Image 1 (cartoon, helix red, strand yellow):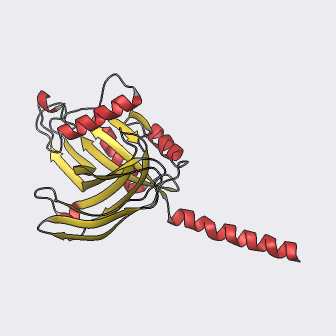
Image 2: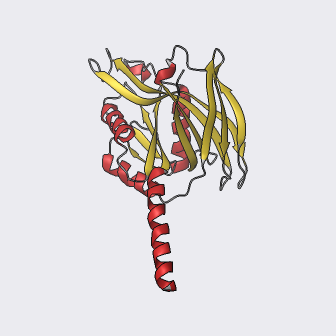
Image 3: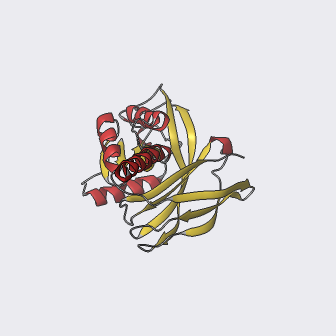
Length: 250
């Protein structure tokens, strides 16, 4: 009788834990380095939208960042979402991965793998592989907006390794009618377009992070079209140790 009771109790505990994993998917950060001046990039932009909208990998919350580089701007079309900052961030990844050069479209999953950003098979495999890495919980709370920008509180559980904490503000959706360059005549759409990415602090291995932050909103941005992403990353463009996403509403 006791053995039967223990078996039933174990089965009940197991069945009750299964839905929890579905309710709390593991955050996986997917970065796409792209440019509206690159004819190979639109398929990668579409793939990023699919990952963001369909969330195709069970157990994963795919958090996307579209980072537009500026080194294509001199050949006919200046990407309105581009920044030298993202080109430098991509170059740091190139050093981390031991690459001889940078390229677009490039997708980086959880700071752990990189590949041509239009390859859906490699994207799915990389996300599934990243699910095997435990992540520290990150919380973004007390979010408010005023004339100074966005105020919020960021806190984390203990993080396993030394980490930098970043906050990104990104457009939910952006688009352009391209009139010159390799994509001349095309209407391009994007998701998760990073407008601001700032390091807001660092933590030692085994420590947690807690801080009130204030960050200006991108000039002219509609708050209803913004999302905030906070992530912890090993210094030097290393692995992602935790991430969270929250929509911003005025």
